[in-house]
Amino acid sequence: MSVTNRKPPFRFSHTTRVGFDETDAQGVVYYGRYLPYFDRARVEYLRHLGLLHAGPADREFVMRANRVEYHAPARFDDLLEVYVRVERIGTSSAVFQFAACDERGDDLCTAEQVLVLIDRGTRRPLTVGEAYRSAVDLFEGRAQGAAPVPDDSPAGRRGGAVDAIERIVNREGEADEILRQSVATIAKRFETFCGIRFVEDGGMVDGPSAGRFAEPRAIVAITYDGSSVAEIALGAEVGVEDRDALDRIAALLSPYCLVGWDTGGESWNP
Image (tube, rainbow, N blue to C red; front, top):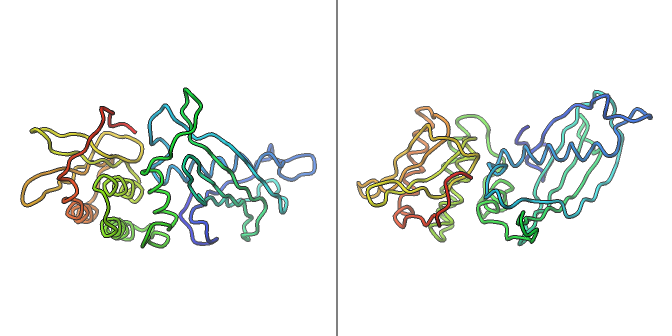
């Protein structure tokens, strides 16, 4: 999987190689096999954004519509680059676009899929949450002042994380939403779980979080006017230079941590 600028407007791709069992009697990839390729690409895209296991377990995205076009055949052992993006997010739906390409970058198969968020018990549509929407829009470059395709080097990751948080803060808005967008950005940039805990009544209260839950292995203090008000918890250890970047992020977020967080009784395990 990779963040890419090889095929705009796509910004993410997943590679796969054609297996012999995926071809038909004509020696080309069976038309139905492209859907699993697209499924895998979507899973890796969501994993990269920290959204694969995010959200309550009582809701899920289900397929509403699937439109596929076939342009050219692929054969056994061909290497395919499968591009994926979220073209838009509606009230309860997300529209994904895909392109399976050969090594020259030519389209073999393209698709557009509409997925709807539903309650698993009632099977009724639900509103897509702001954390999901913000993480996607930030990555796809739709957020105001969003960065270009991020640099995957360690230095680019650190600088990109700080720059992204600065843009989120500069757009202003409600503290809750700023913190939601920020933890989603940190989780994506550092490829780990990220959450914020608030100091309250002499203890720590869990706040917004993003990424697949993991027991915190690194803590970055957030202070305001010399007093501890919160902390950033990460599911992976960080190096000295990464910590410097996270300290800068903590300073940017400190004013927004003064209001605390209403958990609504939910556990901190996305």
